[in-house]
Amino acid sequence: MHCLQLSNIEFDMTAAKHIHPETDAPFVEAFGGWQDQSILIVDDEPGMRSFLQRTLEDRCSRVEAVDSVEAASVLLDSRHFDLIILDNSLPGKSGVEWLHEMRALGLHNDVVLITAFADLETAIHALRAGAADFLLKPFRVNQILSAIGRCFDRTHLRRENFILRRELDSHVDFGVDGLVGNSTALQPVRETIKRLATVSSTVLITGESGTGKEIAARAMHYLSSRSGNHFVPVNCGAVAPDIIESELFGHVKGAFSGAASSREGLFFYAQGGTLFLDEVAELPMAMQVKLLRVLEEKKIRPVGAEREIPVDVRVIAATNRNVEEAVQEGRFRQDLYYRLNVVQVHMPPLRERADDIPALAAYFVRQLAPQLGVPPQQPDNALLAAMVSHAWPGNVRELRNLIERWLILGNIPEIAIGSKSVAIDNGSDVSLQAIEKQHILKILGAADGNKTEAARRLGLSRKTLERKCAEWGV
Image 1 (spheres, rainbow, N blue to C red):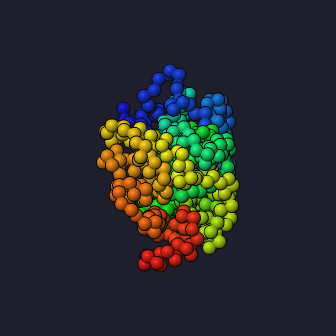
Image 2: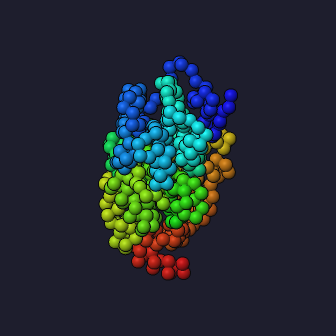
Image 3: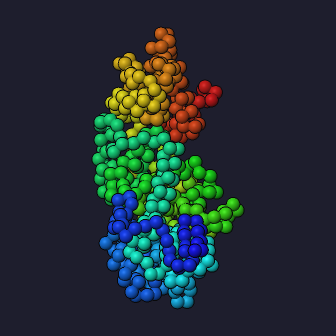
């Protein structure tokens, strides 16, 4: 018996039937079912369309069927489908030919190709066109369900692996709520997050670096109906301007030098879930225009593609910049600002929620001590008092790093907890002017030399800060 095996597809060329290790036992969908999945059927045989619809409509959230590739193209322009079941023998244009064209235009959907005729040439063309699986007519119910299940499983695992890699890279820790503490400044944030979790409106989270903007965005996602899908974070300021469009929207093969194959973007991985655009104010102006269009049209266009792809993604953006000032200076589009700022959540700096510092310190000790392999000791009252009195220019992130350093070394350098520790540790008098200079320069350093941002954190005017820097020769 002559068999052909290409990629994950195996054909028995003699018996002309599709073979996979499967049984006649009831098929059980992996990953808790397909309730959120949508399927498009493209077949010109009314009987086959009816059979597939009856088989799938109780298993999936949405199943639609058309009799031509022209009708399929119209549907794909208006809505997203997780999978396409495509007949190869269609009037005017074969399924494989249409799939080749759609892949070149930016279509990334998984496709199961079905056909009444199997030969080596058709199989090769199907694989080259990007078909995920291949079935020969007639087939049993469990065969089509197995093929669909494999496609959904591969997509799920691909997205899962992608998200896990990003989680490991970001080292972000979060719980169901994600926010530690019960200070007065934190309560309105908690209440707002709970309310925003019930809707899909675009949200802009503002606040200084290290205040927990991503934690707040994650809380909105995991408390929402989108929690069954992925939360995809991206730091817009960390992606090179020349590749940010491909990173977000994906690209087709040959779209630019080095694009040897098509690639899905972050909007694809966030499908049905949430895309978190951190440091959104760092986006290049050209990218701001394209993001605005995506927010308004709910469609993306991969780089080099000729067609737009519908997406169902909630966008939450965040920035530590003064966006209104950036708009006035022409560095950020006003229309995009209004589109992102449907609802704004401001994360308070740690100095405004000093009551939460003991709870945060205890939380970080519980979290870090097992990772470091050290005893989970707690800060004494003197250390807590010094922490509470510190200005925390790096906010919660700085506190976490300080606790980690304390657990490792058993002490904290003077500079780490600010002016109060200088007086305590040195046992010597330090002038108010020296403390002021040390504190201002520290805040200026934390703001990467940005005097406007440092002045805002310090509660000073920029002119006052510039005058002091001039006096110190900075």
